[in-house]
Image (cartoon, rainbow, N blue to C red; front, side, top):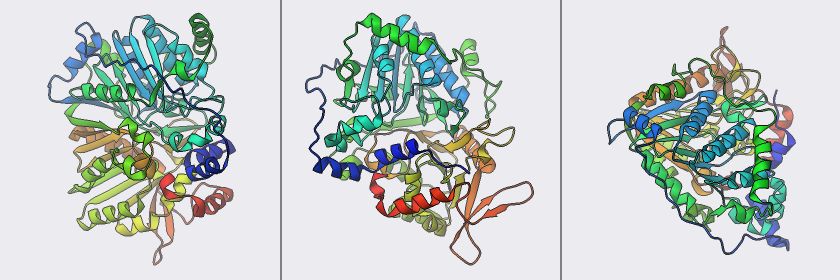
Length: 533
């Protein structure tokens, strides 16, 4: 059995129950702190690939059709981390980095150290981080910005009390409406030639390096036609009014040399790894990115793609309708609804709403097969979201879709498990495959926060081979580590089916969770507004 610790529950409540904090803000005479009114934001733009860049030359050879893009799916955590570090270490001109979360852990410090080293080589580094999870890590972000060739900006920042997330919110209660909106995008562009985008943040658990729990996730390495568009999307966020130079928020009077020494001490010492030990091949049989880069040609599958992102001003929207007008979610669902054969969806936080249920029902009436993989209550890191999802399970099964929930323990069992070791597994991959030819990959979940609260980044690619790879990666998770949901014979009570070598095991209640977790979610359910999940 697995339960969530109290800090995790508190954080979920802080992030998700915006209505409660809005009420507190309205009745409390707070107004503790404000953002700086006049901020100098020097405008800068992405640099095109340079003929002098080895990465640019490899990128051109790896995706030779100027109208197409090349893709390498990265479903294996260690390979995905190594790909990022390899690109950073080989960049000679520019690095543009945008993340929802960069954790102050082994992975985060390895990543930040690599960025510093690139800057010391003369590479221009622009780092944009959402400010929600920077609490307590000011020396890391402010220290990196103290180096020449580096700029760091915080997106939609908190004003003060930056040691803890709770402290940040308490000091900014009057501004909760703004702070409840976050930048959920994940993007990295190296020398204008290669980009990495998808579901992963920068932290141990996204790259299977945590001893406690790890995410089943995926992102994609891209070269070719779509990379300049991704770079322009980064520029839109970098130059937006919501992006604040880190020194305007973290007002540290130390001289640059002292800030640099503190940063060096943080990232160069302690329990860290300067390199990542990789298995010979990943789960798709691909060899490490560095090997291909050394050979001068990266093995990529080719196709056409479009990329898109919500407008940065979505976080300042004053109504749900205004936020929805700036979102990308509906574009993806329109492609899903146009399916003629089958749809496979992975969404760790899945709240379809009544409209979504009707859309899935319409697909099934047209004999379109729909398979959805999401987290079980035991696997999710957001138990309140499961409250919203569970309201629709019966209705979803009535439509005839195939519904699977990831098991946190079954996903780590076996020699070829997507997550190895003794940690727990959780789904974090956001993907869809439509008619075995069209692939969606990005940061967006099928839930209300992606639609009307957070900003998101995504890609739609017409590439049958990439589609096969995504389905293969999801099938490995589904077959090895997920429960299939169905109705009990003659009733609409739910059953969870766990495939087993000795036959299917049938469970009649939420698997792998304690009675306390079940009771807690039941108690929360009447008080959780769905739009804020």
